[in-house]
Length: 134
Image 1 (cartoon, helix red, strand yellow):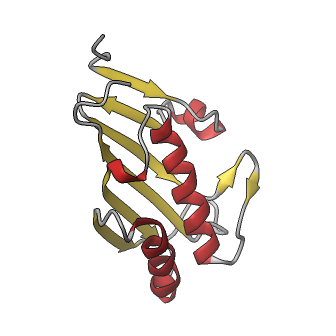
Image 2 (spheres, rainbow, N blue to C red):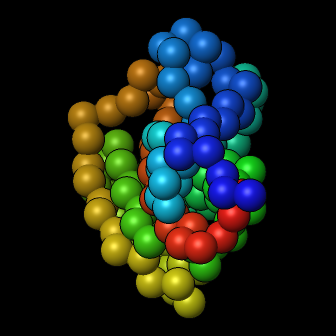
């Protein structure tokens, strides 16, 4: 049976409820994951460590696409938002460790900051499910 044209997945964060968004949305063959940080519930993992925050954020984003039966091999685009240009190398190292075998297109931006000043990294990703039926 073919999957629905659009399907949304929530992760349960308070931000999703407050602002009315989904963690991930599948539209046709594409799955988009919203900006994801290293918060899990009310706990920020990797405080002060951009490498660790990137790893945790990407892992959470990958968990979101897993809800659609997809894995890291389905990732075709990543976007990384940094609070500080000094963190480029550490976050780049985390990205390479996770995505080196997949080689998605990637964009890295330095932004003015995040709502919570302890957040150093936020990530988005896009996956392609092709003929995979979720």
